[in-house]
Amino acid sequence: MFNELGELLCTITGFDSFSLQPNAGAAGEYTGLMVIRAIIRYGDANSSIKRLLIPAAVAFKARGDHHRNVCIIPVSAHGTNPASAAMCGMKIISVGTDAKGNINIEELRKASEANKDNLSALMVTYPSTHGVYEEGIDEICKIIHDNGGQLYMDGANMNAQISTGGIPAPEQSQPLGTISAAPWGSALILPISYTYIAMMGSKGLTDASKIAILNANYMAKRLENYYPILFRGVNGTVAHEFIVDLRGFKNTAGIEPEDVAKRLMDKGFHAPTMSWPVPGTLMIEPTESESKAVLDRFCDALISIREEIAEIEKGKADIHNNVLKGAPHPPSLLVGDAWTKPYSREYAAFPASWLRVAKFWPSSGRVDNVYGDRNLICTLLAVSQVVEEQAAATA
Ligand SMILES: Cc1ncc(COP(=O)(O)O)c(C=O)c1O
Image (cartoon, rainbow, N blue to C red; front, side):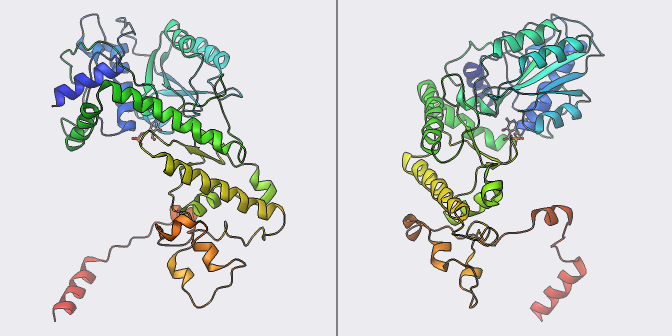
């Protein structure tokens, strides 16, 4: 089954061979960079290592380039990208994006040429985390190759580009050193990927990509009259995810992304990715698997939050003490004898009719994130205390 899964993944991606060792995206990045490093340092025309994880389209040369250690990473990349490059001992050079969210190609060219002698790789996410298909991706690849570097493609957004891809040609792979402690990584997770691919089939997978893109565009269209959509491609569309810009509300209503995220909990939703890849925004990636009814409910929730922000902007709700700042509202607060908020308990808990039939109850109110991050609190009892409590219980 592992071999078959590897072959299916090769068919989907066009890669020559697949490693199932990495346990997560970040571990995949580390593996990919380790492969690039191995190719650059030790690769030769006959080495099977060159076929591991690298797209067939990329040709490699034996160079013995031990000194190549510069990794270029766009600012739109996931934070795990620089972390992985650092773990591989690479020197990281960051390149910016343009006003439309695409990699700034001139900046990339300059950085590549300036580091021509030491360039190892570019880590690129396609479509990007800004939710756009980089128009200049071919040129970007060429610039890197022309300057002696290799490409690592972050596969996190693969669900926005699945079609029946290349031709599989699995080869014997050569061990690269330790990537994960077990030979097949998270072996028990592999049947999930296998059955998903097998049950969907090539048409189903292609449809999944199309529907993921369609869902994101449907939501962006519904929300664009209420919130600025940060980046779009040349046709005015987004990829499989998009960014809702909340930064303006800090000035108009004192509202931060966290207030929106917490109020979404009252309305039955876990908030999407917050303040990444752009601080002060929400990045929404609906995927192919939600029904239109759920997408609509989520849009309705965000639109009603926009109305709640407007109440503050108009001065009808207090800028410091309002339903957004008070969110989320857990049962312990709502059923308390004392209620001092300037809005009703009912409005706090049931701001929409669908919540009457399916209410998710947040288990606690707002916590101080920064305090929590800086002050580790051990909640385990000391062993002696456990023994004492057990003795007391059995006495
Ligand atoms: C673009 C991108 N790269 C890398 C990662 C890291 O993946 P993981 O969290 O599985 O390590 C993510 C995670 O969401 C991502 O969005």
